[in-house]
Length: 421
Length: 99
Figure 1 (tube, chains in turn cyan, yellow):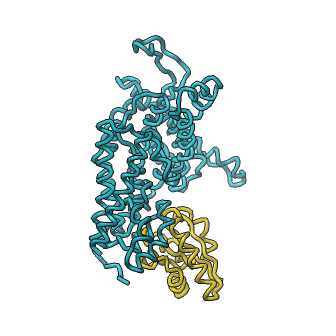
Figure 2 (tube, each protein chain N blue to C red; figure 1 turned 120 degrees about the vertical axis):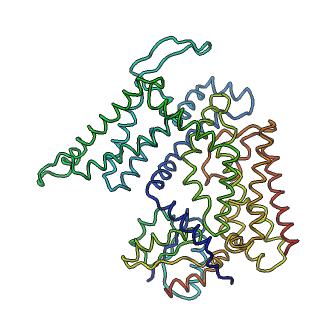
Figure 3 (cartoon, rainbow over the protein chains, first blue to last red; figure 1 turned 45 degrees about the vertical axis):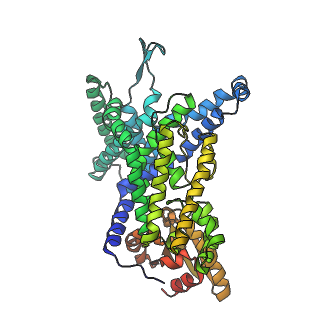
């Protein structure tokens, strides 16, 4: 067996990935985003059931039975994703900063709601004309994907400030004899008042500007540009390249890439999903639903499904035949470690080429096909542990064709490979 | 009885190896308790672990785990990547017990 070389690049990449993965700030963010997955799945399922393109009879049945309205409530869970997220962030960041998580959840949620306006303007849906100012309502718009960046920034700012105040002991201190259940809420009072004062001031100041509120400002100045950049074709290709490259050095690439990219990818995917469920035009051409389709559901990073399926049957060497038998079942469920370490793809320049090039090629072809309108975009965000094959049905019958094409591509690589061996 | 815990990103691929290692342990007649968990959940299982093995794909977490758990008397190591790929349960088990 070949011993893994003590290669300098590998050493550096390992260190870098470790730093990213164990960084408490990044970790709190990505695990909070992951924590909202169950809610997204509820929304995705509801919108999928409601949007199934299986004929007018089905659609009519949904609306006449009232199911359509019920499912809409389910879809609406996604429209509140920032609320769920800020609670998760309050918990994770609170834990990372060694504060009482319940206090930090409340502080973060409060701060988020304080910068959210309590009124909205009602416009004529057809002409867009201003009709009235509705008071005492929280516009749902800012509690969903469009408020997610504000939630991130407010969450961090409020919890860091809170944690600082508590650590500096700027709190009401109770005598030792008072039981913790009584004294704990008191600990949060002064920090809460200071944090609230800060965000009320911020909200008041933004009310004076043309943005009207902090949400609108962050959405147009930070989230929108970042999302359109990060959800572009180029960004996806770079992410793929990086993810596969890390695997070639034996590091779990998608874990590292997702921890950085999720905050940029998730809001866009949710926005697409919401638009899909209301029948509106999708705001983004590409979302990470498509990225996952290629990078996860075709046999994991590197689209190894073709290789995995054919290795136990066609491999000429005994070793690959044996490996194929080990790897085929996990491979179907997109677990690629046996092949990466056993084939190996790790530190193997010949295998690295198809491993990196296949997903990039597939992404480019898919993007081109979307661009010329051959098939629609997939509107539904997905969890990567979901059943791998169903996803390809989402864009309609053409998706099936493309899946077959993908599988063939995978096989071509194997054929090329057997020629090399 | 030695208790071995394997970790990787989601605890899926290490789970395969656990099965192989269990078969090997029966063959070799050694009493071990082996389980696989996601790296993020290891803390919960640290009390019931004597030997912690990291999948090679998460080897960048070795320094962190070493610093955190070695003082508690847990032996920490990364599984050899070739053995991991071939799912060589026998060899991984032997090396873990030799730590």
